[in-house]
Image (cartoon, rainbow over all chains, first blue to last red; front, top):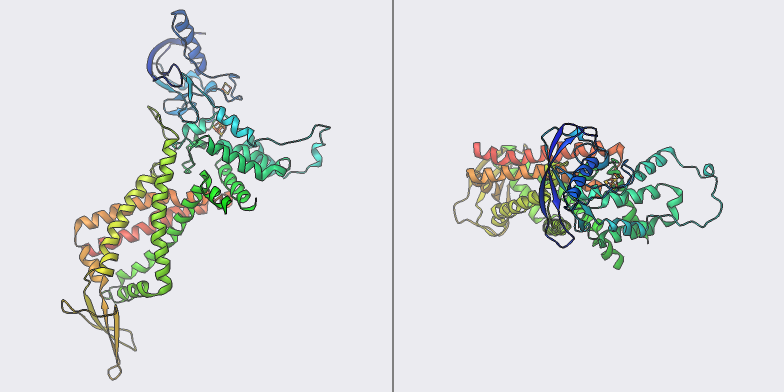
Length: 251
Length: 259
Ligand code: SF4
Ligand code: FES
């Protein structure tokens, strides 16, 4: 697949966590507007490899917007200019021939840079291990219909569960706060009866882990939700605050 | 008690303290604004001066006001502390940011600092002078039955009395003479200065932006987010706290400057 777009790319390159990084400029030509943003990077990387230079490291996996691996901060927005999509679902038709595109990694001290555009998001994994699960004994699953759940709660839980853990909320937030992510993970379980037994310790432990990871605190600017590819609602943050304060007051 | 210390020191707890103190300060603004509307009464400051005496002598109000001063300082410095922690969470900055949030919400600390400076100047202008400085006394004579002001006269320079307000009844004439510390005169003198007036107006602009985000943000932080009420909270924040109150306060220096 080739086309007639020429793009001027300014990409953040950094050898490792400690090294001093900087921008490198690349001209990428004959790009098709039907290519995804990551495919454009593939074209560039193939060229860099054939020229004998190191390709640009970036995270990706499913390339269909469901795994949360891709993570590029494009022209000042996580996942680029299009609303409600991940980097892998962003296509070159969102740009114009001759555009200069600046690509940076997620920047947060809790997400240290591994290399170039790839950052270490294991802080999220540790927050999840602190309580983002439901403990069940193995055995036959109960019939789903025996646990009635109000439609409204089910809808809200599903909407919160749409979070793919990409970290764009942290990247977008001026405080590098992870509260949208953590609140989505607390909410999806707090809203459902299956999550009820561990509800309080979950809120306390996940928030404590989030703080221990060094994320900033939310100041309700709303940038996270505006940039989130899954459009997770700020209502979840208010719910997390209630869950946490309620749990702290009664535990 | 350790759970309380731990909670208050968590990221959410720190925000909650900002929200609670901030919303309390919002209620104070309503009281302060309504009281100060008496500046517009056109009675030579009689009602405003009496109100000032009441506010500074009533033991309950005095107690609350010391709590209020403490809360202003706490809100300001805790806010700076929280801002410092939040900035530390991103030591390497982006080259380009394309903000998808409001300017006010991103600049609460800057706006708050302007307001802290403003409050210091404002307290120096009036509170300090009223308490420790030389404020003139004015003698008002009022008709007891109708409540009409009959005459008003500034006491000679150097006149002073033990109390802020001294009242003498003249039953034969049906009048009452009140000699009172004239804060109104202080206010009207201060606002002859264009720089003070401009500084006050600018600060009220900062207040408007601080509250357009701050009021609704306080509710969100306390977990009070419900689709049924979100619109109402947001509109109250805009109409009352970001428009009506700053406008009413800004009108005061303008009124005296033009008078
Ligand atoms: S809340 Fe949105 S932006 Fe944050 S991790 Fe989940 S999907 Fe990504
Ligand atoms: S690569 Fe999986 S969401 Fe983008």
